[in-house]
Image 1 (tube, rainbow, N blue to C red):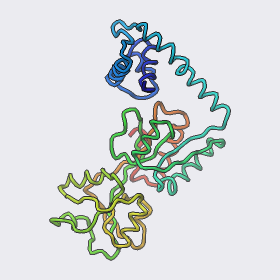
Image 2: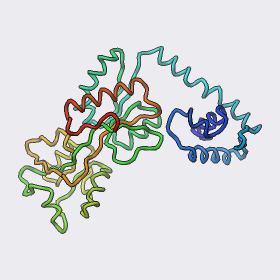
Image 3: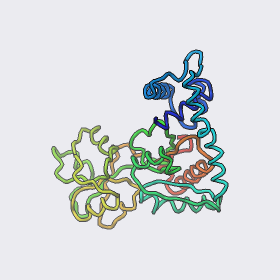
Image 4: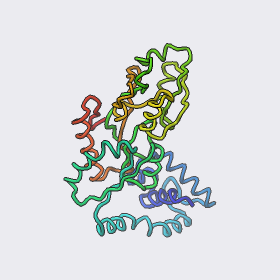
Length: 295
């Protein structure tokens, strides 16, 4: 039995139907998804668990509820007891660049409000961060919103980052337009793995330029550019854009990438505090790119 299916069944059974359960499930999920997963649970067990209209648990449903209720009904109380027994810990996932260059200042402000706060920091790419959130391995992710997040996650846009190209200082290219005018771009393209936001914009302007080198970080992209291995795709915030041996080519025809925060369920007071600190930090340092708290 899938534990997620059992959790949804618990809410449906406890609150007397799928539509009522939706108001109490502590994360975003749509009614068709709950209905579909309840059907999968019933198919897997080979029994009908409840009548839909009017709602009524079957004998098998009553038996399953009696089995799962002690576990799910005690989750909040157990979590509260564990939190009370230790100082609060907040787990943040982000890229190495964000963790190293941009998060420390925001953390200092947060520690003023929460002096006993213990932090756990974990670096990863967007797809890893979403998985860790859904598995509750982290509490908040700071990442480029390259694709629409999983429906179970909530998000807040923090800033819009212009995309740029990085070329060696000695390169003959002075603008990206010179590249787009070519029938075929010969220089290798260096990007982050799965940098879909960049490839999507290339397709939009009718340019075919497949990635030749996938680098695991913006710093590695910069190093490969400096060493003459190709042209790198980056964003204007990255520290690598200020390397003395690199020239930055703006991409005004590309919409900016969005950097945001992701979390699971309703924002806790601690998550809200991090969001507030983040908005103030971005507005103070990069007002031209900052999103408002309502974006």
